[in-house]
Length: 417
View 1 (spheres, rainbow, N blue to C red):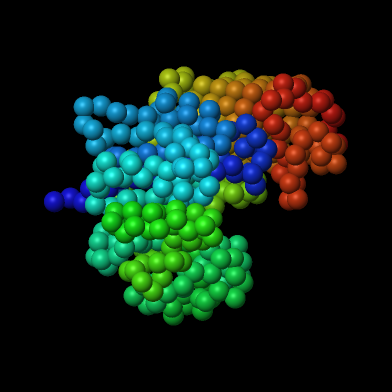
View 2: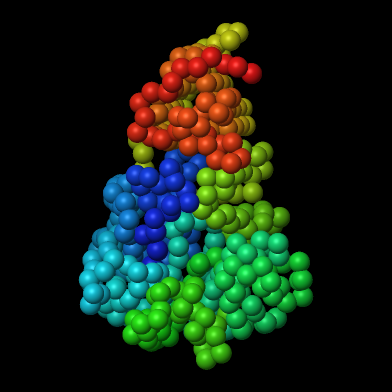
């Protein structure tokens, strides 16, 4: 008999480090790759892995995420085991609080687990860009007879202070956790790397229910899986690390390496977006056996028009989503969302442009992220004079310019390069 798996997707975080892209939306609702949202990755991984019963736990600034889920994901039909249902914070705790942590989010919805009586519960975050065959992790969990299994990814030891590091034995059994500790122990047999937790877990249902109830009674707990529940299980429960490096996606070439990015900052989000431009990208969006699913937009195809000197619609090393028109303008090394217009003589380079943006004639945009609905007037420049840009927009330390979506116009400036 196939194991019955119930999934919870944690999509309620504030995502403050990704501001201003999260100023008006939850982090999982941030666009990515032209036509997708970050949450599409975890939901696609679950569906492609044959896991069809999923609750999406939401909380902060959830309207955009709710709309996306309702348009492309929310399901519920004749088969009661097949659903993707968003669950807002309902203040079901005795103190009637919002979700106080990742574990509390499940505890406040513990009735959903008790009603479904699954064999295993998958608890996955909605904040990362990755592809994963979750079924392989479940099989590993069953093989080990684990109470809980934590997905882990090897990272260079120099980055240990940026992650929750797992201390594991050679057989994968977890013997300790080290939160953002530069001196955390390395992987068995690999002194150059540490095991970083990906924030994705498989629990045997009985063990999860026991841990959630015990944690809820602990007045000293912050009610978080990574900080409280999992460390408390070390030494008294079978706790294992699943090496993400061993994960393989059906349909990928044998040499394709597993891909995972924590897009917690503007820089990491920008770098992950730029990964898509490669001739053979590390993140393969074109595997038809493992599709990245999203809302079913009824967009017209992208169009490239005019073929004159200085007025040629073209895109080079770029991704252009449906409904976009390059009307005599150029995109180079960029990601263009849906219904973007790039007018004659305009050039967009090394940039991420969200839906419905309009790039005016002879405007130039370089190394920037334009949120939805931004209008760049004729002759304007973004990304060429960072001192001026800092007065108008958000500019990161590395010089990425972020133009917020509520703006309807960008100040005109002459090109000074």
